Amino acid sequence: MQKNRKKSKRISRPNGLLSVEHEGTLITYDKEADAAYFKVKKGRVARTIKLDDWLLADVNRKGVLLGVEMLFVSPRTPKRSILSSLKTGRVPVLA
Image 1 (tube, rainbow, N blue to C red):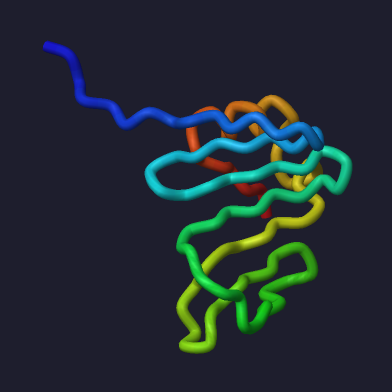
Image 2 (image 1 turned 135 degrees about the vertical axis):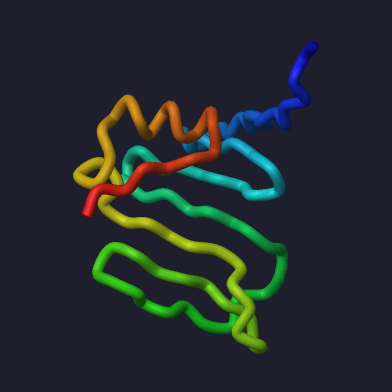
């Protein structure tokens, strides 16, 4: 019996960004900036909230979370995990 798996959709970007769409979340990794963005909902960003020096949250005017930006990704996750995360849609974070 075959399991019903949700597949990730890789998105090619000419500017060198790595992107994948997984279960409605668009994950983009910019190797040059060493930053990842997780877009969880469509909408207009009204405010960016700094959660930590390396973690920012975008919200709309009602305070609904639209996306999360993770800065300085490589010190927090092994290089292999970054590529694996883009394929699976899961990002392990080291404290």
